[in-house]
Amino acid sequence: MKDFRELVVWQKAMDLFEDLVKDVETFPKTEAARIISNQVLRSVSSVSANIAEGYGRRKGKEYEHYLYISRGVLNQYYVVILHNMGVYKHIIK
Image 1 (tube, rainbow, N blue to C red):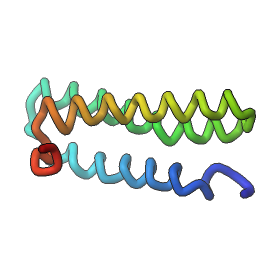
Image 2: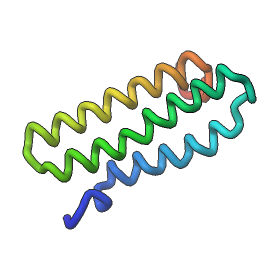
Image 3: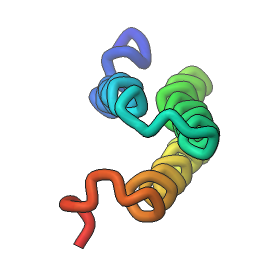
Image 4: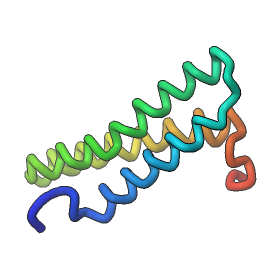
């Protein structure tokens, strides 16, 4: 593998970010929704960035550390968006 862009997990993280960008455009035009949108966009964009940074270090424990950070960010995303805001409520049961 030549670089991080070949990693399926990085590609999926980018797809998630692109989908999220489209989704936040449908959020209500309120101050609260704007604040949450900005927070979630920053968080989710860091997932692919952390995967890329970890891949660039390519040292077992360090790479693993960045993957754990990415997973933690995704957990934050699920709590804020999927649970608290009720977006995609049909996914959460």
